Length: 130
Image (cartoon, rainbow, N blue to C red):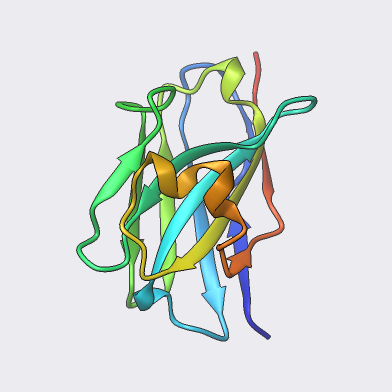
């Protein structure tokens, strides 16, 4: 079965850290750019961060720049999102998605490109609260 599975979400206090994982099964991530998205209740889905398929270059939205770091381990077929200095406004369901042969940018994470993503995970809840 071809799928992406997120893990690592949970409840954390403001200022804390979490590391999300996005693991692929049934296909290799080598040829895919991976985007992380989040959606809070009553809000539109937001592109958070992306890592390119070819050179591993990354892009992060201004809202998380300097706090979140995306990385990939092709040997483990997994992409990670390290989230530090978490804020209550980071509370959301986080999704990863794969798009073939893409170079990351804000446009790759934008709504017009999302229909081009080949695979989406089921999401993992992140709650930042004291």
